[in-house]
Image (tube, rainbow, N blue to C red; front, side, top):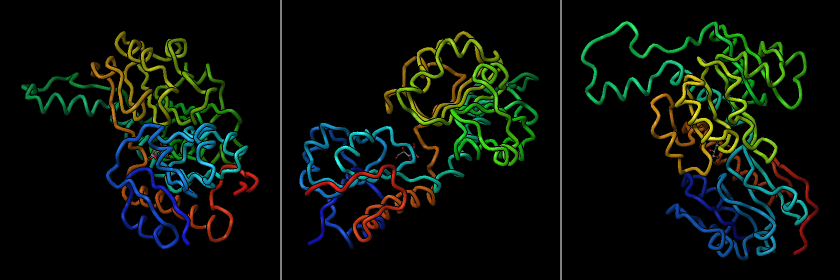
Length: 327
Ligand code: 8YV
């Protein structure tokens, strides 16, 4: 008999087809939003679950779902997983690294350019019929080429953004990370390691690409924003909660920094009303990895993890190494 899995959100039909060759698939193709209780009820008796980054897997859920053996996240970020609880419960966790690196770095750069060069703001102006004449300072923004690009969080995506900035736009790249990169990787990215304070003070454009954890909660708040240049652009493609959205909205309203590009928000899909009112912020709905080929590659990798764990007893991109869960 095939084991049962839950696919918690709508996904490509062809990926469901692949999964159906190995599993009894309970698929949420209607993309219903479930409470944690409804999610737990739907998981009863399931061997595995295919999640996006919104489904929380924690100790109470694991205790309520004793048959669960694997949670395959279709995301590189996994702050929805309590990894310690999963390891303790003998449940394997997997994510989808690498397949989204370049697409997400492309988007980070696109958001940076849209924000610094005021593309959304000027388009809204044009569409609302307010463009009556040209002016020398109309939507004059900040330069990208030759400026200083700061990157906070220098993993694979951060390195991709650094390469785009240094090699494509002649930017000076500085970065801060928990640990410094080796010399060869720094040379490839043409990036210089600096302390966090220097990063904030020197960057003309600061891009956040670090994972969310309690340690990175509000890593950019009021105290950090005052250190930045008044002409600076801030871009967050990492996770909501890394930036204090209220402090950011206040800094943008007061002109303490020039502009922000945000793809992720605290409490998304809700977006703080103060941010919605501002003209100097570009807001996108968590789409940094959203190219068709990349989303398909992510879905296939999450499916491959489930299939490989079922057929070979090991996943392709595991996040933990739990002892086998007793049945
Ligand atoms: C996902 C992301 O598309 O991979 C991540 O961590 O944030 C995005 O690429 C999103 O989280 C839905 O799974």
